[in-house]
Amino acid sequence: MNPEAKLAELGLTLPNPPAAAGSYVPVVRTGNLLFCAGTIAVFNGQQTHVGQVGKEQTIETARKAAEICVLNTLANIKAAVGSLDRVTRIVMVNGFVNAVDGFTESPAVINGASDLLVKIFGEAGKHARAAVATNGLPRGTTVEVVVVAEVR
Figure (cartoon, rainbow, N blue to C red):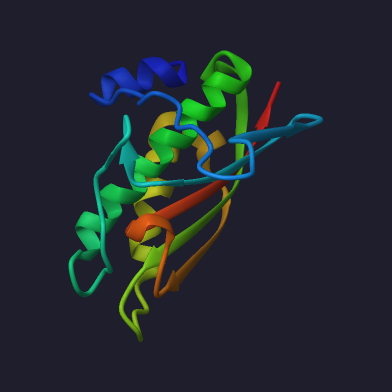
């Protein structure tokens, strides 16, 4: 099944591709790799998750934020290459979690992003990863996700 059909089967839709919020571009292609800029928990321009895990957010709500970040990234990938069918592999995911001091469960949060990528792309969605807790992210977002994808 193609990734866009899988999204529909999961009841998910891609948001409008988010525009760059600074002096960068959403996606850079070099050879067959796409380096995707970090995306935050915004859906069609509306911020969905703000605040720190362990304070305003829970691990579960932050997992949902990570899923929204992935949807934004996929929207940028589709805008860059025309179709998610062109993705042959998700290579790397770096996830950043806005959390209270001492928070050690960032992998559980970023599993929201990782699990969704595997649901959409199957084996090709399995990737290397880092999951880092920090005490602040752009616009106070709860999660930011960076992806490297291989395309044909």
